[in-house]
Image 1 (cartoon, rainbow, N blue to C red):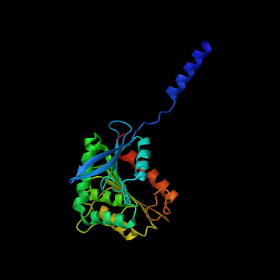
Image 2: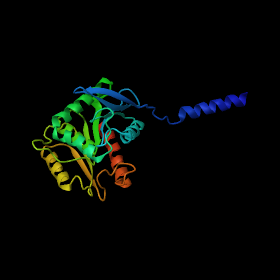
Image 3: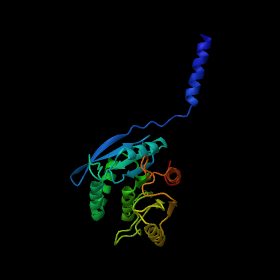
Length: 251
């Protein structure tokens, strides 16, 4: 009996001293904007956790964004993934992807309304919008930079291989948080000239920013499983992004 009691105490001490994994269960959240239903994705390890708002690529909110959200939740961040297309709209054909993204590029006012509606949805879930960074991939990166130019009050705006062109009549003069950009110098979709023009505008308006290029990395270099995926650029950009979150958000 004494040996059994000793073993029990030893096991209990091991459990108490072992590092504890953050528990977080993700779920989809319906919300409405302009009379249309959208479906975001929410995952949070703890109430009041620092927040990352995530905007999807041009194929909609898919398993890719869910996976990235889970990676962030494991690090202690709440994530609300925004839906820019509508519930159930997850295009697979290039023509449909171009149609959906093109419509929003042409109607920046609607793009901003959809972002505002998603932010309201995140707020209704009790998420900590006062301690938040917004990030996005490809199309989502362009959307995040649109939000930055709108003057939205967030601590940071992050683009992974996103569109960098500044629309006519816009600039970064109203941007309130810092800006972080990851770009592949082998990107054939977004040019280095656009990268440079954005840097110049950020500098002109005194916006804190950091912009990194990765040699040999094409457009969409962080998309797992695609022929454009570049492990080195993905690993380095993710590591810098995590450090940026630690520097920018309160724990």
